Length: 316
Image: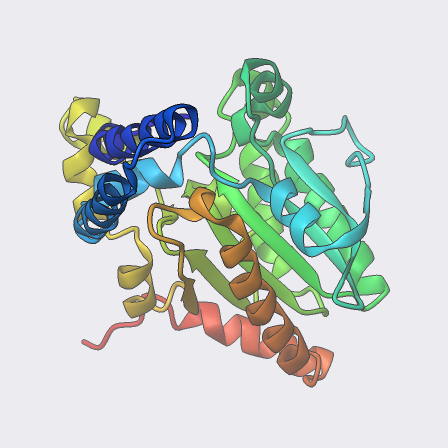
């Protein structure tokens, strides 16, 4: 289990409770009152710590290695998932997952970035940073969903698109730009959810949707806090200051009309109780799929276009 620095006092009490329980089982000692006292202290400490997290601390929660990833949500909420591979041009990008699944009796296309749980899997998944072929694969699947009139559920979780030489040689910027253009015209409902990191064009490359949601501690930004700090202050240590200035959390994004809603997380983050998050997400998806399916393809595309046109509006 990974422990963030600000969470350490919580885990110390949890460890103490665990030790007392083991001691009580071995010695039949009357230590229940002490365990109850520690439980009460623990709950209060959780409220105190998680109730006043800074933006930087919330970003650490969004990057928590135990946090549910795209495939975790697919397994928890859907059945009959069939993964599809390749962009039909270069290769299959394992950082970008796509395929058909059944969701509460509804056939859907699921697309999203996938990170790894350990070093080997992270290398395989390229830490959730997709190459151009990943974005081209995503668009191929969206067109397939459009052909069969199947709703698209997108899970965004990436620090950004892969910036390596090979990716640039194969047209990374063009692949993302084409997705921004073509997603605007897909004639089937698209719902995107930022479940962890929503970094730069790498996130937006699959994020043009009719409805965009974000988990409570996830973030969505034009650049990572570290990248912003390196540009502005020539020092990545200033990342916490950059995080505050970027206004990348859900509360600000709603004001800017970038997202449509925030999905609450359990105290401590989604990894503390993924089932609660899945239930909230499932309800939201069902409501919005039902509403979006009432629109004609022409009205759906026009509404999506107007949604993005209003972002950044200002009066002179």
